Every structure is written in C-alpha cells, then in structure tokens.
Image 1 (cartoon, rainbow, N blue to C red):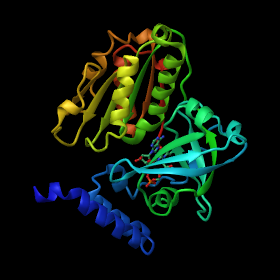
Image 2 (image 1 turned 60 degrees about the horizontal axis):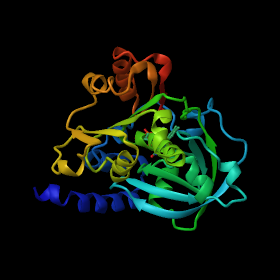
Image 3 (image 1 turned 120 degrees about the vertical axis):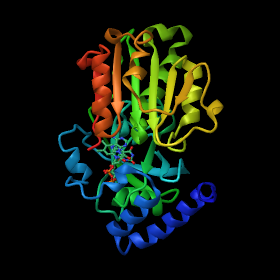
Image 4 (image 1 turned 90 degrees about the vertical axis):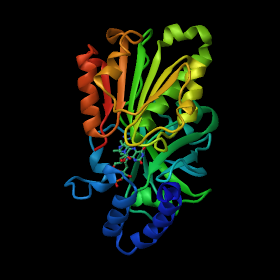
Length: 320
Ligand SMILES: Cc1cc2nc3c(=O)[nH]c(=O)nc-3n(C[C@H](O)[C@H](O)[C@H](O)COP(=O)(O)OP(=O)(O)OC[C@H]3O[C@@H](n4cnc5c(N)ncnc54)[C@H](O)[C@@H]3O)c2cc1C
C-alpha cells in the first residue's frame, strides 16, 4: 500500500537517477531500472534485433522535401513517462510544415546526431491558425526522446519535416472507427481532432456528412490514458463514442470515465468490443484506423475482419 501510494515519487526519483546514470552506462542502467518500475513491455524488449534508427524504419515512407524551424513553446508531463511538447512554426515557414491528420515528423535536434520520429497529435487546422505542432513522447534512452525528457527547454529550436502515408482521408457519409493501443493514441487523436474541427466548421447538421466517430482506446493503466479529458470533451461536442480499456489495473474512479458517450472496462479489446459497434458503425460504411504495438494491430485487424469490416477499409500505422 505504501509502495502504491508513493510509487509516483519513487519512480520520479529513480528516473532522475536513471537519467544521470544513462550518460555513463546508457543501455544497461536504463534497462534494469525501467524494467523494474516502468512496467512497460516495450521498454523491456532490449534484445530485439531491430533497428532503432527512425530514418531506416521509415526509409520507404513519403516525406516532404524541406525542413522547417520550430520553437518549443510548451512542455507538459502527461504521465510519469510521457512528455507533451508544443512546437511553434512561424507564418512564413508554415506552408512547409503542413500535415494531414495522422502523419508524423522527423525531428532534427541541435547537438543530437540521431533523427527522431514522432506522430503529430493535434489537428492540421491548429497548425494553420496557431502555428502549433503537438507531440507526445515516451521516455527512452534513444537520443531524441532522451533529449526531450532531460534537456529540452522552452524556446529551444528544432527542425522538423512532415512525413508518412497513414492519414485520414474524408469519404462523405462514411463513419470513422479509431483503435489505439497505448501511445498509439497520438496519430488517432490528430484524426479525431481534425474531424471535430470539420464538424465545428460546417455546423451541427454536418455530422450526417461526416459520419459517426468512435474511439477504442486501450492502455495498461489509467495514468497511461493520456488526453482522457480532451477526448471526453470532444465526444460530447461531436456525439462521438469512446470506450476506454485498462488492462493491467483496477479502475478506482469509474465515474470519471463514464458518460452517455464514454465508458471504461478492465479488459483487453476483444471481438465483442468490436462486434458491439457494428450496429452504430456498419462495416461497409466505416473506415478503421489502428495504431499500437504490432501484436495489438494484428489482433484488432483479425477482429475487424471477423466482424465484416472490409480489409481495404482498414488502415494502420506500424510502430517498427
Ligand atoms: C512513424 C513513427 C512514429 C512515432 N511516433 C512516436 C510518438 O508519437 N511518440 C513516441 O514516444 N515515439 C514515437 N515513435 C518512436 C520513436 O521514434 C523512437 O523509436 C522511440 O523514441 C525510441 O524508443 P525505443 O527504441 O526505446 O523504443 P521502441 O522499441 O522503438 O518503442 C517504440 C515506442 O515508440 C512509440 N511509438 C512507436 N511508433 C509509434 C507511432 N507510430 N505512434 C506513436 N507512438 C509510437 C511507442 O511508445 C513505443 O513504445 C515513432 C516511431 C515511428 C517510426
């Protein structure tokens, strides 16, 4: 009990220790401490024979030709291990940074040799009107994420370049089903926000043209359900549905997650979760977007197909 109550403080102290030690023994120290306390299977998979190089992982993805400068204007702690970052792009540079909901940026950080790659979580309109690109970055000893967590300060400048072929395309009268595992919420939140902007721009009756939107959002713990409040507000605003799933702990405060539009369960996303949505989002009239760890994507795709969603209506962002 004592440990649970003080877990956040203990993890923060360990993380600060870890960040200092990382400079000396990057991989080994990082692994041993985070495996014990971060409870994150992605972090624990240290011996995977795969590249960590963002440019290699995305070598076949389309990307814009030019880079643009962006200034860090806001840094938030979304959770113990996830930082929120807002970057500002000036009006003169904005056309170079234009993105479609669901895309990511290459991030070039002064003094860091490795290029970072992070999904954009805000809407294209937010960039056009306010010059903002918003990111949510999980802690890692990979240099770009490590820089964001340990060195990044307000007013720092980075360079970004938009890329990716996973993005929302409007199909009139079609519904949108978004399915996120963990921090895979990022590109899907961008799509959700973009749909909200479209609905608000056209007016209430436009929900007919826009179709319905539903989000299934699964994470290990309640704390990992980042953007929960904003999602609930958007559901109310746009009559969208959201099913939160928490897979590794009991939900103490269910009332905070439940409303006429939102609900929470303590199970993994299942065939039943999807089949319960088929009445509201008929398979032939729905486009499905998934982002999460590969096993999650594969399982969810199988469920969607079993429920009658055509394969060519299913789009996903592979993590690696
Ligand atoms: C197209 C793309 C988008 C990415 N977007 C993000 C992001 O928004 N936030 C982030 O923290 N890291 C993102 N990453 C991962 C990031 O570029 C580094 O790979 C990561 O910081 C290095 O971590 P690692 O090697 O320790 O972990 P890895 O083993 O590489 O773990 C990957 C971790 O990165 C995250 N991730 C991977 N792909 C995505 C994705 N498409 N969308 C959202 N999260 C993803 C997840 O947190 C996952 O736990 C993205 C990678 C790619 C290829």
